[in-house]
Structure formats: structure tokens, C-alpha cells
Length: 76
Image (cartoon, rainbow, N blue to C red):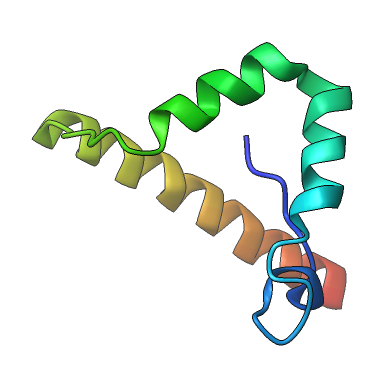
């Protein structure tokens, strides 16, 4: 999944990703084994097929449309 952080935590003017805090969160939430697994993936290249990319596009289009519609509902 994705774990969002605020602009200050991620920006070069701020905490630059807040690695100590984020590492502590990941360790507590997922454990060292999962952290090691994720770090091992960072230098691997993943090639997606056209079908996989189309599936992702459709998934995020549905998500985007849902978010857009719910934003309208919240503003009303």
C-alpha cells in the first residue's frame, strides 16, 4: 500500500522523507523481514505487459472517478 506523508515530511526543505520516523513505523507495523524484502526490490526493474498496464489504468480511472464524485458530495 501507500503511506502518505505531509509535504514537510517529504520535501527537501523539510524532513526529506523523515526516514527515522518512517522506519520506526514500518518496523512496528510490518517487521524487519518485510523491510528487508522491500529494500531488496528497490534496484529491480519491473516490466509490465500491455494488459497489466491497461488493468492498472482502468483500476485508477475507477478510483479517480470515485474520488472526484465524492469530492463533489463533500463540497455540497
